[in-house]
Image (cartoon, rainbow, N blue to C red; front, top):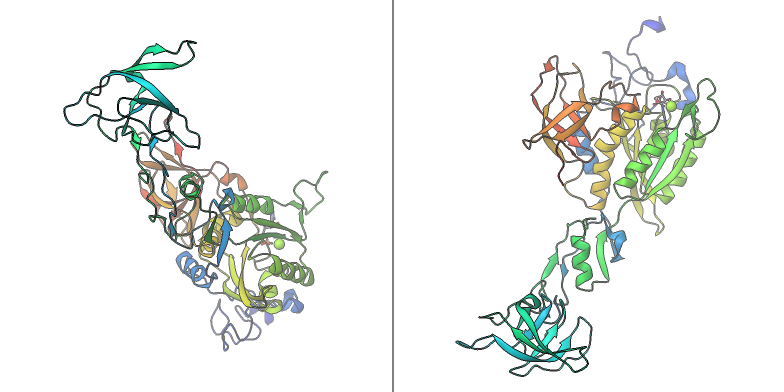
Length: 482
Ligand code: AMP
Ligand code: MG
């Protein structure tokens, strides 16, 4: 009669169908299978509640450890970091009165006086450090862009507004110059001290990100800031699991049942592309001991572990039991109502750090199918890395797009449909599918720059419908910008 007891689960007295009845809180006893019991006594339906994507993202926000503040050198490695302090300029930029043009520094005449005339070139100011002789009334000084004004000079006239009148005897130097410009005012073509950045001004605020565009690093460099407080960026370990998984580059034909590792190289490169340091944790076999040892080692060296595979319902799906039963971790969710990516698992594990303090480390166990792994990586892991690194808003940017063709909805689960979003000539963004969406078909991610957020439903969305999309990559453009 055992074969007819649908939904019956060991360790609980199930009344209904899918879920075993619980008499204990999850923290008191694990929900995962005990691997020692084997295939005959495992759960036959997942004991993890099915969460909506938003609930899952909420739990990630809640349980990702808060950012840690560190002090680091100001250099290119800051790119992607978020400031953990306000930064005040301790110097003015420019630090001296500088010329904006190549030309001649002069003393602007007072009211009614003419700036025109022929003047002796008394000195030269190049953009080099050192002393410069003061300028007397009736003299001018040749000056280059960015060079300091001689003391006493008020203004600079562009070389284009002048004529050479006479030269020195050897013909090597300018002797007299005629100024053609009339009505030159004090301060003309001069960058005053502190006119770009004032001393004492707040140039960057806590929470601002150092971009690769260059503006933030440029500000820090301009005022001579040597070190700055930022949030530590988590170090991420990436592990593939499965007895069938082999190194992707292994030469030779595949034996029956072998599968090349697609997830580890893709996950590692995506995480690196987001600017986080990555540690390659290799491939773990489907043996409880091997997996536990690999994870324990990794927890010593990284802040976040991303695994793929081993979270479905098979008897060799060992991630959940290993995290709960061997590592003493807490699984915050183990099932999400989405397509692809249903068995995505998020857990934290208490660990002692080098200073002997108890800290919490994050494990994401993503589904094994390559598409599911990459989609859930973008959807769930990125926000967690952002929270840990102080980046806000966390996760992928959401935009509204217009569908270029019909999309059939999944009746049960919300779907993250891989699509190409382009910027049309009219400025609107529109989306077309990358084709077949089966979760093993990694080609559905080729050229995809977005995930369309399709709700669950019975209907078909018509061409022209508006829908939300998460941007994973650069927007395509229908016209050449340059
Ligand atoms: P699992 O969740 O371990 O049952 O894996 C689900 C499917 O994904 C199986 O077909 C696996 O062979 C496949 N898979 C798991 N890990 C990888 C990987 N690293 N690269 C490619 N396919 C994988
Ligand atoms: Mg597996």
